[in-house]
Image (cartoon, rainbow, N blue to C red; front, side, top):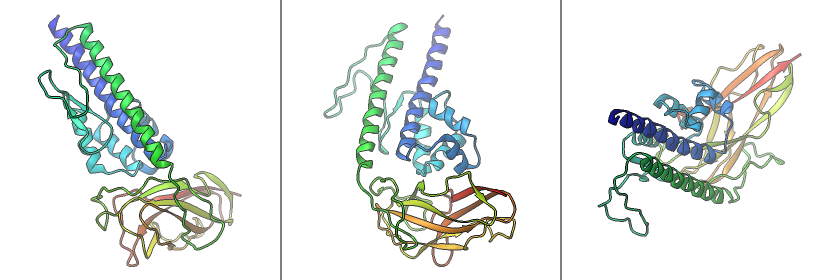
Length: 307
C-alpha cells in the first residue's frame, strides 16, 4: 500500500512539473507575440508543430531538444532556459515564471518567511490532504502566471517607432515591442547585442505569386539589446538564384536602429520563370560579412510560384 501511494505521488509530481514548466513556455511564447506552432516549427526546421504544442500544453515533461527548439523559435536565451529546464526537474523545486533567480525550493515549516510575503506553514499530511495541498499550490502558480502576463501586456503597450531600412516612405508600422533587454546573449558578436523577429509585414509565408513577378518583401525586427545598430545588412544565406529560384540582391542595408526600436527591412524579389516553391533565408551581418548572431535562426520568406 505504501509503495502504491509513493508511486502515485511520484506520478503526480511528474505531471505537476510538466504543467509548471508548460506555464513558463506559454508565457515565453506570449512575450514573443504568440506565433503559431506551425510558424515556430518553420523557424526551427528540426521539430514538428505537434511536439511544440504538446510541450506548451504540459502533456508530458519535454526533452531538452524540444525545449531548445521552442526557445530558439521565440528568440530567447538558450543558456537561461537550460537552467530553468534543469531546475524544473529537481524534486522540491517550484519554478516560478519571471527573472533568473525566481526558482526557489519549497520551504519547510521551520523556514523563515520572506520579507513582505505571507507563507502558510504546512504540517505533514497524507492521502487526500496531500493532493489538496498540491492543487492549492497549482492554483497559486496559475495566479502568478496571470500576473506575469498582465505585466508583459503593460510593457507591450508602449509605442515603438518603426524605421525603414530602405529610406522609403509609406512603410507599414509594425506592432510595439518591449523595452531593451538587459540580458547579455552569449551567441552575439558584440556583448549586449540582441535582436528579435517582430513580423512579416508583407508577403506572408505561402503567398502565391506569378512567374517572373516582382514584389517587395518587408520584415520588422526589433533591437532588444543594448547596442545601437549601425552599418548593418541582411545577407542572403543561399547563393544568388538562377532561373529556377527567386532572384534578389546578395544583401540589403538595415537602417540605423537604437536599442528599444524597430526597423523595417525591404528586399526586392523577382519570382522564378517556372512554377514551384521559393524559399530564401537571410542573416544580419556587418560590412565584412560577419554574422552578428551566428546561432540564431535566420529570417526568411517562402512563396508559391504559379503560372
